[in-house]
Length: 116
Length: 116
Length: 116
Length: 116
Image 1: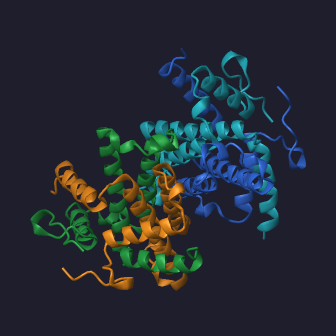
Image 2: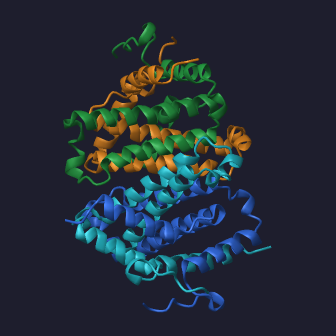
């Protein structure tokens, strides 16, 4: 595997580093009071819907070409970032390891849906 | 920083490795035909709502204690995994680097919402 | 216009009558305590996503034929009912007249998007 | 029961009348081509999330007072209208009677959750 890219202040660009950066960002603005798990899942679902909004009237074929337009591509990356941000903030307040959860889920799915 | 934990077959437990594992999983089952960006964002929003469903009738205080119950904790981790899975599959088909997108977004938010 | 069909106990099958029936249903079970606007909009969005789930992997053409299968048709009607139920319960606790809100919105849209 | 209020052009302000008005609105703009069931449920879920967005950081108590602020009250009515608009357009293309579906669902719920 390649090394994680360095982020600001040389912090590695990985999930744990971004999760800490988000936690510091919220703490510096006293926003933690709003970050109940209930509020964070609502915000996560709102951001997921903002992604859906980009695609809602597109045909499947048009949806495959959204990154061809620079403005739409920027909007997609922005909403992907928002979804990931709220997911990691949720994991932070709940003490969930998102990568371990996904790894375990793929294990279960490999049993549930055996490859042909 | 700690080393990434080894995943199955010794692959590192990081976003890039999980994204590749998801891509192989879909390819082995011939599910890629369903994985248009439009369908993946729909699936992402459905999984985000399954997280919301866990919290929808809880008070803010109850929502902060969801991990105390082992069954609910398992359900939360399972839905977190599903959200992350569809987010990474979306990034795979669109060629989006989720970590770089989030890093750039936090940079923009630091300018937009200066810390006091 | 046709007369509204009679509902249970001869009550007319219209939005106002169904809204009252839902209010009585919740009151009889002491569920009003859970029906904050915040919780009701979360529940509404969860039910909307359960509708999305039915369609998420379908092609546009397949989606146009969902009512051909009796089980899927039942599921669609069931989720439509759930969305409408939470929308009307939200309107009840907020004092919003859903039909008047929609009528006013169509008026605004006729100005915003003039017909060619 | 009170008479339905007259809408524009004296049409009754009821679900069937609004559903027809929405169908004429879409037909006049040649938007029916976009109104596959799959697209309409996506749009419905996006509008439901726009309602959630209004409430996402509010406490339960604050959420109960959203209509006290005229701007927020307008926004709530606007989003309620959008949710109802897409729900009725979905019902139009699928041939679902939303009021009958809800009436039948309340019947089923009265058996499923007997009042104490």
